[in-house]
Image (cartoon, rainbow, N blue to C red; front, top):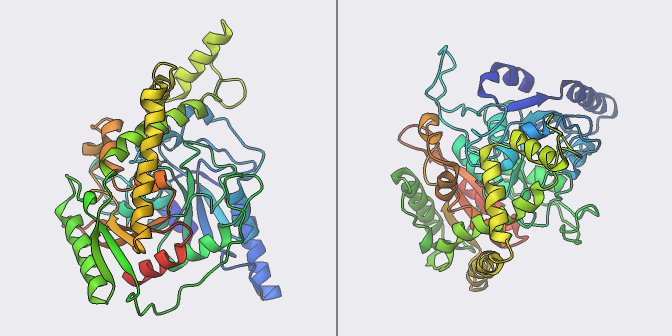
Length: 460
Ligand code: GLN
């Protein structure tokens, strides 16, 4: 039935490729296991999942929604994909995204923009009035929200899993940096990238995480400790032992009244249920977005250097000189957002600018992480914040603002989490006046996903 949903919602442009052969083989194998051996490989056996198109999958196009990688077919599986396969999950296809995961709307894709199923008029012939799905993992979010998959892999560098999850009314989990392997995830900002988990409910997110977490010899940044799978009790009765912090600096200008109301409501609910709820201060929050911009573009500039037209993907026909080949390939292969970020990163990394921008931003990153350590050390278990400023913006409105402004506005609550490497989850918390989903974010202590997700289950 997920396959039927996928066909019925093609107009949303969530999938860029379907892996029908692979998925039907996987589905048959898991059916066999169930009927003959009466045994499941794991909780994911036979479960339809979708995979963002920046995870390599053996023999399947991995485009990162860029012209640069349109011809690229990797000869190996990313660790996340290999784990999904070994747990018996049925991979339905690769999902649409912003080019190289740079963006927060899934509108900057060589495959065209992703449409949000919420409020979408499927009956209309020519429908210009629709809401964005958020991004950059918009395709994965829509796959789950529209029922084409029960879970999906996204990636989260500055909010790319949580932002679209919030706009499409699903759960989006950004695990602690180092808990899930990045091997085979096309790198954006290596020091912040994590695979993200997108599901309809908190319990499904836990099942996915239990299957995917753990040390990987192919990713030296995964922590070499044993991951202990956990379950969330059927009835989470008490949050009485929790101390929930409300960071006062997260009252950002431009936050919609709907989001503020939902934030207040859930904070009150925690308090009524006996949790300690208090305002906390994270004084460096306002520096975070600029600092994120400097550090992310620096890493982007060096990561993108590999696309030279020689080793991967697209190659220009302009081969008059080696330099010209590089330049023409990159001009043709990347969109202007990607090119802009490469330029910015290289500028910040120039010898004469390095200390002013890069070194300075690294220092500020330390202060931002420090804000999290301090509140957690003072006894706070969780932070409760909005995920994004509002419900899903209209496409016509969103596509006008330039990408930098969009990022600055939309990533304000999400990217500090990546700078600090801590875990966070967004979950649906009601509808806005326009009847679109609103999400709130819980931020947890590093490697304390269990506490965070148990509280999330309680909110759910
Ligand atoms: N919007 C952010 C950016 O464009 C998020 C990126 C991400 O998490 N992949 O950098």
